[in-house]
Image (cartoon, rainbow, N blue to C red):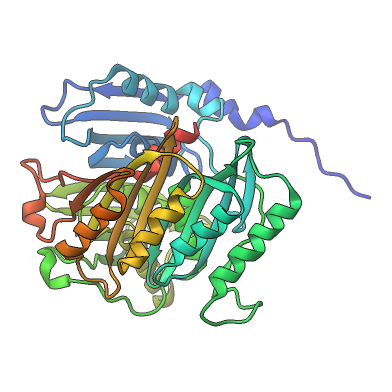
Length: 450
């Protein structure tokens, strides 16, 4: 029987320890924003790791310049807070320097996780559930009702819908023990019931295109995992029709083009679309998971628009040689950008956490004819904070009468804040060209789970 040669795990970080990354947070060079500069040894996935750290802090990247040709990685990010101001909070600055500096690279603060199967995974006090399937009105209500009936509490969750598909990552625990669900019979019952819910409406038991749920091991960044789930589900295929395209004022459909750079043997991916938070993360995440390496990049914002340019090669060294390959990259990037776009009404709810809270809220939404297009749930102490982006069953805006009915039904048991997503890009922007209202699901969820 053969054996593997011994590999010293310390060797992998030797180059980093010999040439530790240098990180600076500069508030003096630019009047409008903070400059975050990162110089370090190059390694696979490093650009995504850096962008992930910044976006998880809810920072807005207004400009970025990336260069990683050869063995060194040099980045400059122009960032602001959500209000368009410089980053002056000492704790935030220290976190950036620690996470992106030598300790972050050698102590496991930054992690690149491989793709994993859809499913359920126990992590300390929580069990992580991942679901992917065909979306339909009331599906989130049915999923949360199954969990409530099993006396399983949803502590945190994110839900994305795109192109008639739904992807969910939910963190749950046992209502009595406040620990991860470990009983095999309860896990099996939860898996079977969720699978049945996802398969309602057609499809055989062997048809994974209808819906999937299973057990798995591993961990990953929540937003990245949602992208992976929908990408694996091929949500980028088929025609996509944007709702209310004429009302928005800016084109919803992003413009993605790919050109050949003969001089350096790169392919240049150009993206121009309406700007929004986490846009760079979504694009870099998709390129990384499709195994494309970014060697150079330039990112900028022009009023309501974003312009991003990436010089890439496949990880095996090949460029995009066929039209089919180019078309797939274009479609996948367009899908990644659209997944996080939220039009319509935003409902922000705060209430004392309890089993069945999510089921109760989503039931009321369903009974009032509302569809959830995106959702974020988190719990801090005894308080549950839920945010839902909703539209009516036909995808149109919710009328004032429905809003009043919602206030009557749930306003007496929880705090309800209703925000209307802007239908005109010009009205939605403040003096700096940024949207005034937005909710950052991933950052809040990552902080909660830290």
